[in-house]
Image (tube, rainbow, N blue to C red):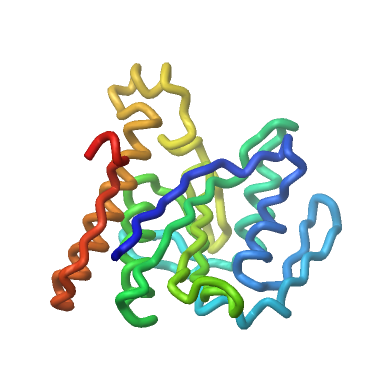
Length: 214
């Protein structure tokens, strides 16, 4: 049976968390947080990561950006002690398809998010733990909380994305409230997953709605 799981949560500085550290861990990379001088080396976890990618859309085209530069910029642009420096989406990936199609699904979903919110995105597909459930293919998707652009090849983070605005501001802008945006994100991922199943002739389907909603 196909399993749907998608969780959206902010990464908060007030909880002692660093976007640089989080990105290094999820991508099994080695990064330095320039604001603290701390080094984070998770390269020994490389076998747990199938693939990772850090990008933004420039004139509608995917452009790869440096992971360390992106998240150091995210840390430096936020001045508040209680700032949200990133937002993470964790998704379950279907075990019914192969690695290639799981990567296609993540690419489709993250490019959709980048277009919707104008942010930079850093994703990593994790393999199941050797001693755990071998169906547990999943991806960690880190999004900047601010819209992103390249200026003279330099990463610039600007105003807060719609996903980070208060409901009061969203109402004034005639935009979906936060909970409705998250519902939209969940629905879009379910649709992409089901489209993939259908294209491969797989009868399984996922549903983003809760049991009560169904």
